[in-house]
Length: 399
Image (cartoon, rainbow, N blue to C red):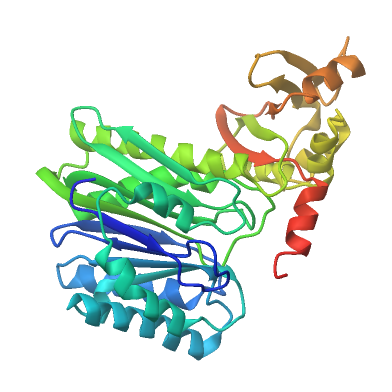
């Protein structure tokens, strides 16, 4: 990625034997856009990064560094958390000969514990001298917490250029922009206002369409960097902007779906597809109610076609004037395309057999297809089942 340099090291923030500190260096002429969690208990680094980015924008400049640590979220730490995050930013700024406000901090890990500032500061000289444009792969591993695999994507932009990105996330996943950390960059030059627009639209279609457990984190963020190669993309409705947005959406979707596939304890990847809605809000309300139902999710884990649980979730999705006699349900194997009609007009479908439903539910990738029969709007949410392993991982998370 032209101009973006990355390095990763082991600072021992929580564990001594794993990468846990990642540094991005951005070109001086870059443009940066970001979105942050709406959780009211936002972590200190989230608040600092958002304020620093706004200040840089107001001064007509871009941040120069992104500093990410894992193992400690620096959330729920009060004023001391702000002091700690700023201390890390200040130490890096002094090392790089720049302003503290040119460093955006990001943290992920355990909530409520003091940040190991001394360990991070001590590791900065090492990570600073290792900065390299080829650092994406190691960085994808360096930002992980309970993830089992790194997550990366690289998508070509029609007409030239690329979008490259990495993300972390496996649990505490229900975006309200967005439940994970993600860092993306394009080698194109893009006006900041356009970058904001295409990032929001890409996030809404990807990271804001996933859930593992319905919990929105305190530390979530996604950052998009335009490194600034070639003529600037300055027409929001132009062909180059549309091509960049298409590539960005594809990269974000790949990363978002990778997060779901790596969901804590997940054994199934499930698309909840709601059609026949009057608007996107009710389609998404219905999809998320199904996707986050413990009863539906445990049935998915068991491979049990307990379709009554799905209809019950539809019925409590907050659609007050829903005519249940217009609701249909199908379950499909997303890989083979095999599908079974389970319910029609609010009741069991003629000819439905339990063994047919069980055969489809045994698939590793499923689609739950609900038609509300009241409009022409469709939305999809991606989710997982809920397994014994999810409980174990989260019961032992701080051990």
